[in-house]
Amino acid sequence: MLEVILPLDAAVAQTHANLRGTFYLVITMTVFGLFGLMLLMGAVRRSTAEAQRLAAEAARAHELTQLKSEFVTLVAHELRSPLTSITGYVVLLIEGQGGPLTEVQRESLGIVQRNGEQLVALIEDLPDISRMEAGRLELKRTTLELARLIQEVASSLRPQIEAKGQRLTLELAEALPAVSGDADRVMQILTNLLSNAHKYTPPARSITLTARGEEGLVRVSVRDTGIGLSPDDQACLFTEFFRAQNSVTQGVSGTGLGLTITRALVELHGGEITVASALGQGSTFSFTLPAMPVIGDRHGSPGKQGESVRATERRKR
Image (tube, rainbow, N blue to C red):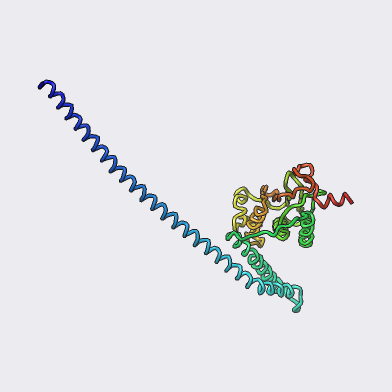
């Protein structure tokens, strides 16, 4: 009997020991589990608090951007009128409306005129920059006949281009596709690019503007034979207030905002702008605009995209 009881006692003791070990293990795991849960909850609370802080900062930054935009627009409006008046009277004085001028007086007035015009250009650009930053730059879209807008911009700039002895050539496809866009903003894009080509091209050289339809879009390119751009300058070209670092560009008035605004307007229309340039070989700025689908071509096949609605109607007549 004793021989039977002793193994049973040993088995019971071993079982108790195993149970105690399991109990301690469960307690330990539970404690560590609770500790881990507390750490996780703390991390979640910290993450939530950080997210709330960042959201509050973003809301505050957006509010400050809106206030800055409104302030810049107000200041620009208040400064535009007196500056325009000043530059206008300077022009009258240069033309001799106030009496004969000496060469020194004419040169001094010329400096005043150039700086006044630069300030007017800056004031006109600042509201657009502020609206871009605030996300409030909007388009008034209509169906546009791009060839007409190009010819209108070219006509307005041709006198100053020809006064510099430059040659402006338009190479427009016979029937450009119609595009959807804001007429004033598209003309602003064209004016900025053509004006830059005029400024940075020496006298007696050529500027060429081309426009053609491609698959689903229209591509407009302004090619000059000017000073060109280095790779480093091209990398920063669309940055606010950037001016190329060479003696020629530093001698030309400008705000460094025109190309920034131009790119924003092109992208707002759903297009893209690119530049190809080399020092001493001129530059080519190209931008695209989405073409309107041709009426009667449900699939918008490329073969018919070269015909605008108006061109089709003229042939029917």
